Image 1 (cartoon, one colour):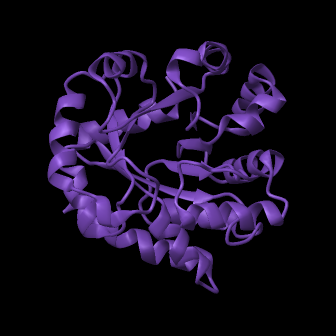
Image 2 (tube, one colour):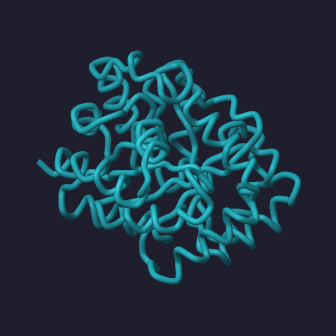
Length: 264
């Protein structure tokens, strides 16, 4: 059992929903990454998803694409990401950290070496958008050996057969993509339709189910949390950080209303 499992057990015991903010490592600056992570925890984050900058983030909308480009231009590669996790762990040994990104940077390093390095740094889970579960055997084995959860994605277009596989193999939490599209397209979020799908998935999944994509504020977070065990907010937070002279303060100000809405 790693930090993700422990955190969701704690949340379930107290009847609370998980608040999972996403930020891109290295944006809005290299030096602000770790302070922003701590600020998010102070504001009520239960899990942090830390984006690994990538040159072709095909599942992401313009906001996160541009944040990834900015981070890469500053030199925020995989080494920087793992160094940021190590620095965060100097003060926070409890908050679960999930790396979210794409297969290429990790495949270059190799599944086993990456898993060992990530576990040593303090990573609890990895979500690879472009790694199909049917082709994940090598990575799943390496992550299992290192005690890292391989987070899987489900969507409105996932077939029942594939959903059975996802629900059976889910670790940490199952990430439900609330609509077919890219991150940040909040106008496409249909909370009623997503809630129906979430209820069906939760009856089948061995892991908690969280919802992401299109969640931009306290109201949308609260609406999606009714039938999910947590919510992920990314693009709206990235926008708030990018326009601030004090990213840590901006992170707190953005997340606190969402925490209050989930707890209300």
